[in-house]
Image (cartoon, rainbow, N blue to C red; front, side, top):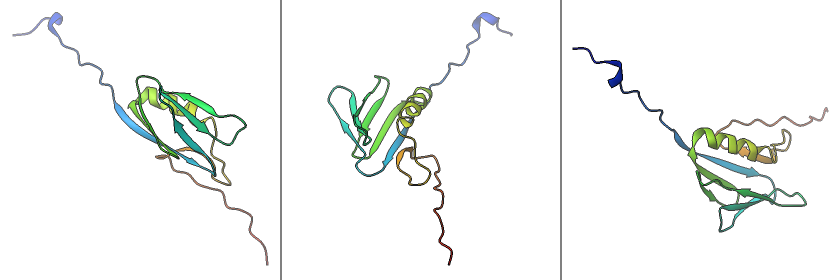
Length: 113
């Protein structure tokens, strides 16, 4: 009638796969894909960043949009490092942003009459 503890089947941890998009806001910011899982990121510094895509992810780079598909926890850690390269400016809006996060710009100065 009752089974022993040896026959219990524990549920496996499920791995959540998801995708995320990163959008570049700024004049002349761009992504460029190379053949061997590398992406060159131009952020108008004196040098260009080279991103190495891990084998756990599937990546697609467009001119100003970067789509990444893979496991959720690993991807969030990777995207955090990517956004740290050029944080969005609160006044002009230039920088690297995740598409899903809300963003608000600060108002500029108002002339008195």
